[in-house]
Amino acid sequence: MSKLKLWNQHANWEAAEQAWDAQAQSAAERQPNKGLKVLPNMPGMTEETARFFKWKAFKWIIAKDHGFKVLKKAMRHPFRYGWNYFKSLFRQKSYLRDGDFFLYGISSVEEFHALMADPSHVFVVGFSYCHKPFECPSGRFTDQCVHDAANPVCQQCFIGKAVHALPERVIPVFIPTVHYIGNKIFELMEANPGREVIFIITACEMTLEMFGDWGNMVGIKGIGVRLAGRICNTMKAFELSEEGIKPGLTVVTDETQRRILDLIKLSWE
Image (cartoon, rainbow, N blue to C red; front, side):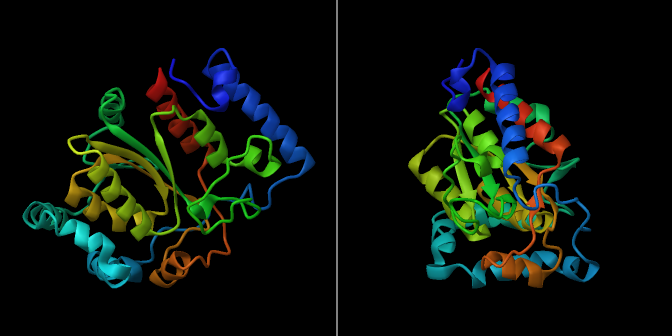
C-alpha cells in the first residue's frame, strides 16, 4: 500500500473513508457549509455559445495568454503540436464521453486504469476552484488549498476528501483559470522529460470543451470530470468566472464523486 495522507492512519481504504465520512457528517451538523447541496439544475452551453465555439476557444486562449506563457511553450514543438491541434479541430468532439467523464486520448475508463498502474507516469489530479466551498479557508479564486483535516469546512469538502486520499505520487493541482492548468501541464512535461502526463481534472462542460483541443495538441491523456450546479453556460459567465467572479457554486454529483474515488483507490492498490 502506498503512503496516504490522512488515509495512512487506517488499516484499509474502507476504514479510512468511513472515518472521513463520519467526521464530515459531524461537521455538517455543527457548522454546515453554505451551498453544499446545490442542485445540479443548470443546463449545458446555450445554443448561441456553442456556435463557432472552437474559434471562440482559440481566440480566448490566445487573447488571455498574458506574457504568451502558454504560446511560447507550444512553439517549442510547432510542427508536432500544430499538426495535433489541426487534427483535433476537425473532429466533431475532442473527447469521448462516459457520463460525467470526458475521455481525452483514451477510449475507455478501463484504458485509464492501465495508465494509472504505470508508476513512471506523472499523474495529476486537478480541481476547479468553482466547487470550492464559499467558506474555503484558502479562498476560492486561488491555486491554494489547505485541505486541513481538522477544519470543519475542509471536512465537508469533496476536494479535501479527495486530496487526503491521494497517494504521495499523485500531484494535486487547484485550478483558477484555463491558462493556469495549461501552463502547469507544460511545466510538468518539461520537468519530467520522457514521462507521460496523465490527469483527472474537474471543470464545467465549457472548460472541458475548451481544454480538449489543447490537451490533444500536446498528447496528454486523461479524464475531465463535468461539474454540475451553477456552471458557466455562456461566454459571458465563463469570462467572469475566469476573473474570479463566480457567485454560484458548482458540485461534483454524488455518483461522480464515487467514480472519482474509485479511480483514486485503484491508483494505490
